[in-house]
Picture (tube, rainbow, N blue to C red):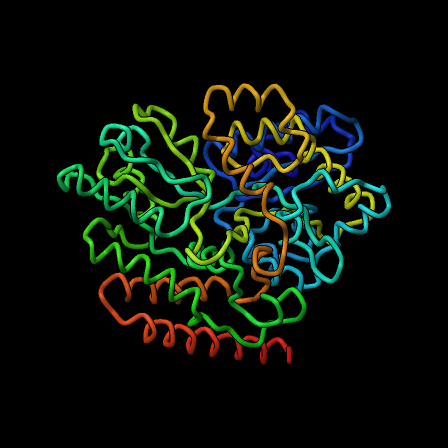
Length: 436
């Protein structure tokens, strides 16, 4: 029966190998599907072949939200994982759960040098002076543009780190010079993008430094930097060079299709989309950093994606095996291949020296831009993520505010409404969890 279960739930582990393998099993829960799952299987296979003490057993757990619920519900049971992947906005929830062993414990034991790993990526998963988890699949929001269309219409491309006005100029010119056949730009209704606009402006959504110096007790989404971001979008809507694809998964797919079919020239999306945007694309792809307000220097944006956490309900030798796997996953060559295969960013600085990435950049020079944006940013409280529970609902409420503005509503009224709902939820959550 045990062999049958392994065959059903652990697709990378054959019944024969399970029966004959005496290594310490390290169950790994993840949320990677499609090509990313194939790439993850390669990482696991590489680790399993690199040593003889541990065997990582990867198990797909569905979406990020589904996996988090399973992790919380199974902790302390025999079915819980030894190491698991949890997405960025669940970080506060994972820290507060008390269910994990900070990877800092093993970093200290091994004198492991984390200086090679992106400081901005690490900052998101740090708290109380300790590295709680290790960033793994990491992305950055970037701005994509159709370089071929800009060349066709004689339009000067935006600079590497553009301001809102830089993008507006290109969008308006493209719309006008194409005789209104091509919309200039779009910004998907997505709370992550609104949060990134604040980060790049050096602003914060929540008090206590976005939760990095204490549990947040107040959110202020109606602030000058949010207003400026939405006014920028509203300006382009009024100029008719903007196309609204709405919100949700279908919006993301539709804007990508619109971009690839020359219906829109500029959009913002995750750096993990590079592979999709370069494959079978007859146009030259342009990429810049996430735009910043006209009157401010770019502060740098926060990362997206997920990190690897170690469960504290497993024996010490199993936790040790989990950390050995995490260290392996951060090796320069492993990270380089991960970026090439998935579009997620290589977090080890030495990955840039590998032949894998040098060859990738020679073939697709634009794929170097997101990593440069990440490397250029210096971690601070504004660009190190928001450590606050209830971020899923917060994102939904941010998107309601964005949709209201996109449909002609008043910016301040939309943001005030979002502020009230987000803070009501935050206060209820804090009371329920016993936080002051």
